[in-house]
Length: 159
Image (cartoon, rainbow, N blue to C red):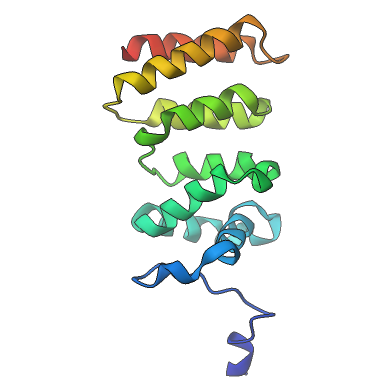
């Protein structure tokens, strides 16, 4: 029975301690699966608690968000950032990009992450976000006009 737990075909181990470098692409894949696969719904809360406490897990999540191969799971990954209460202040430009380019559901999640950021923010990041939003508001994706306008006003108030 114990052999089953060490069978790499049955389970993927996610290392978050001092030797977390062993995760690689397989660790990111496991984290993405734990957060986005409906079959893992019962463990999602535990994963979010882990994300709240463990900096290496947070870094792994942000790495997954930056990886274009997980674009289909962006909504779940981005939502995990605010659900876990992760400090994403240094990634405000990334989440602004996601709000602009993502589908409506993902944009809403990205905006929620931004609105939950306590700051302070780098002035150059805010200016970059405002510039990107200024362009996006001129030709927004259908259904996102008001969201992007509201986000633009939010950014203006951060100046």
